[in-house]
Amino acid sequence: MMYCSMFRRFRGIFSENFSAYSCRTMASQGADPRADRLKFIGRNVWIDIRELEAKHNPVNLGIGKPDWPTPQFIKDSFIGAINDDFNQYTRSEGHPDLVKALSETFSPLLNREINPLTEVLVTCGAAQSLYNACGAFINPGDEAILIEPYFDFYYAGIKLFDGVPVGVPLRYHRPTDGSQPTSANFKLDFEELESKINEKTRLLFLNTPNNPTGKVFSLEELEKIASIVQKHPRLIVISDEVYERLVFSGSTHIRFASLPGMWDRTITIGSAGKTFNVTGWKIGWSLAPAPLIKSMWFVHSIHTYAISTPTQEAVARSFRQAPKEEYFEKTTKDVESKMLRFVELFKNTKLVPIVSQGSYFFLLDASALSVPESDSKESRGFAAMRYMIETIGVSILLCDGFFTPEHKNLSDNFLRVCFTKTDAVLDALAEKLKNPLIAL
Image (cartoon, rainbow, N blue to C red; front, side, top):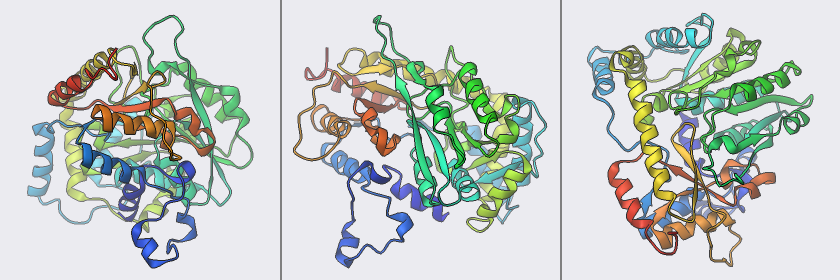
């Protein structure tokens, strides 16, 4: 639980991406009281965002969570679990009903029989699965590959255990024929990826569908990554697949661990928050071979020990009820429809929408947006975000924090949109985007 609270506090931007920042409390106490291993955590951009939002009350497209009500069958599963008295400690590695449900769900998807007692670990959200992996496998000085842009917890987890993050960017190839760009236009240079792997490399973080781009890696791309992994016996892949149930038309989610030879090398991470759009439940899981699960459990056992019993029982019941409700199919269709409606609104602006293949997000290409120069040292991305909040009345997230310091310049022209919003937000956004300063 300590991990979840600490990392939520600092989740906005980690590290050297911003200038050093000390909170008022620390300043009043004099010297920074934090342990040295925490001093990589710099300025928290969420503080700045919240101050701007409080002042200007913009339409908020920044926070990555659904705005609509949770389906009744999912709420009933939680109520039922409590009423059926699943209210005491459960098994540390995962509540028996949930690990069984996860095995039943993912065994056919991964083309193997997953042992629910030895190959599943339930965690406090996917974030703790990431933390467990970093704690279990990173020694001081070990390197970890981050395919950029990445979910910001990756960088922090590596640094917290004295590892060395090594960024390999997806590079945006802007269409030259006037066609609609999609997240598939973000391409990985496989030679560059292979060149960054050496005897110190311990982990490779892969996220598909990707936050923030919405990219869904193709089978061909994943096979190329797998062929590189095969050459490096020490390398473990952390495959973050929390948005696996939100893959849109024309794309297919390929589970990395299902590729030949990759089960033994992969930790697959999932999330009930994203699967059932209940981000406040904080239930995640890791699927992996027993030796990897056991290693992560050592971290888990001295950190949180066990996760909320009624919540785990509720997730198990939701997994079993979801097919009867056709929940996954309906949700994916609804979320894709919402995404396309947001895209249409931005097509009439100076911000070019990059159509998402999956997840809650798509990026805007803001290279044509005229941003007033600032006397401060803020990045162009921050200046663009500030301009959108102060002048246009729309809060969209900058992307600085999704890149390593060496590559943060690649974020300058991108802003992230969360499109899991209500129709009322869509209507309000439509009005804001009529502003002649941004409309075409």
